[in-house]
Image: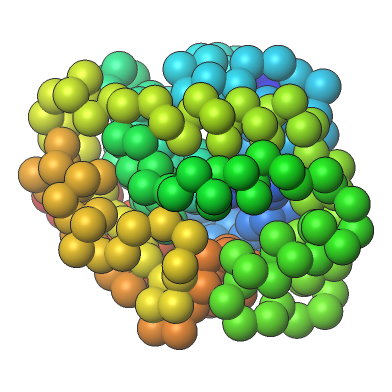
Length: 254
């Protein structure tokens, strides 16, 4: 089972995954807005956070780990939440149609196809050495607007403790994987949330044409002026959208 935090109560449970370089701690500012009405399980994916020692860095392997953890926790009614890198993982896991899955929330997700990046951008990511200066630059670039100091330090600490093998596996392989023709059509309800100032992943128009192509029952929302790290930067606005989505897909409301 993947390392995780668990708190709150209520269905459906939110199973929350983090961005490249993050951990379950990425969700700590958002959880207080969710856990009064929903069980919240925040996972560390292989190579990150408390799972730095765990192997299995391909998109399929990460989906296997998440699926196994959900089953071992005995969860039967879940909304899977993927952020950035793990947005791709969430979509691939959904394509297996697990019985426990109620819907998806995709926060600034990496698309199912290859992540659009130039060779120089990949070279820059690959050169990351998890030093303090490199971690600071990574977090600040991702944030677009500087995070409050106490949250910035959480993100920097996570970025300093990544397994570089997992980091490079995403840059060189996971982000290049093309699942777009393997997904088929999925009837799960999906909420995709973009940051208005996010320069790390494709914007709303491209997300509609790529990530949401497999999901006929989807909606897209934009949080104005938010960067890539919405769980840390705009937790209340993000949680508001997630809670409204969970209410909308509750039994009897569809």
